[in-house]
Image 1 (cartoon, rainbow, N blue to C red):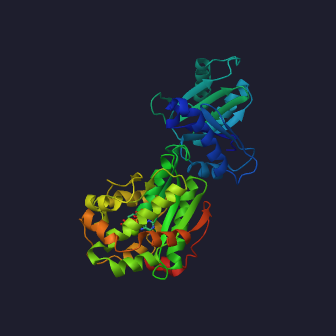
Image 2: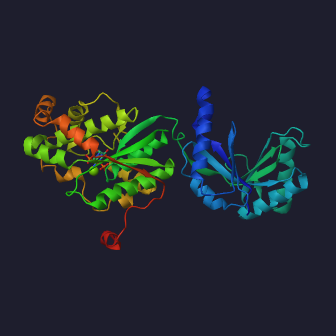
Image 3: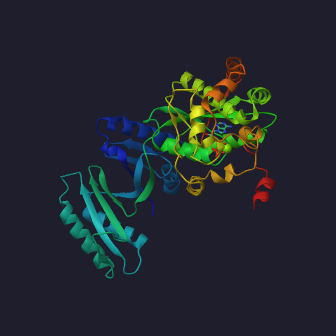
Length: 405
Ligand code: ATP
Ligand code: MG
């Protein structure tokens, strides 16, 4: 069926009162950005709906993009006909034919914005219901949970019919929740945490620590490629890579083994907080989940958090690994995350890091190194990349995938 427009319904933001205007404006902006590769669309964000007029564009491709935009509750591909009852009846029959199954249940749901139209919603429901029952005598009318709900909207510029309601991504439009930085490794967890941050409307910049030559170019490329997948949800993400080799080598030399991990993490967080402040970000997200590994106990979090007063947000805190993996698969980051490239943290982590580090000792051992000098050097060595949805960084050599099969 050739659709004329995609009718987009808002989610939570319809209840947001005074912020509603900003939300709609941001969503309109995000939808335009997500659909920028289509030339002929008309996009208009109104107070209760957003309309994407297709002007001949491929509706399936447009809907695939819309699926990734947060703030959309659901959407319906719609056909526009003239405000003429014969045309409306014909379109209703065509739409039913498209979805027909023997003995199916249906209902007509009419909305009328244009009060000049000679039939009211009650009359239209009756009239179109009868038309369909005449054309398909085995249909059954059902008000609750019918197989097909045919929505009919009488607007000033025409009558719009749709037979399908497709779930959107939910959440809030990215940008309405302020800005934060995300600590992104190449693992399974932090990409999922990024997804949850974006879903609550928070715009994120990625901070990634890498340690050449201990970590490879491919490990770095993997983190960028993960960012490119996540950028599909926000239009674009800045990727900040921070050189971490010298800090790790110095810590390894000067800090007692049991505290290597804790002190490393404190430095990571110090650097992340410095970056966040400089960029006017208001919080730091990470992929920690309570009890998952040594650095993710309450004592450990306390010993690491100590270096900043900025909020540290952990969307995965109480999720089980199996749940996290399921989301990673759903959002399409899992296959990348399990590629076997080394991470800077694991390389310098001793076999038995302290799971319950002492705060005072953490502070003292950290003071063995030149925190300020090392931080300055790392911050001076930062590189920022603007990453767009679907950008390619990993020349996925087929052998890597073959190994995984
Ligand atoms: P992930 O799957 O996200 O790597 P993890 O279970 O491996 O998490 P850790 O290695 O302890 O757990 O890392 C905890 C969190 O610290 C990560 O989720 C991420 O937010 C942050 N982190 C770890 N390594 C890096 C890195 N190289 N660059 C930036 N952040 C990192
Ligand atoms: Mg990791």
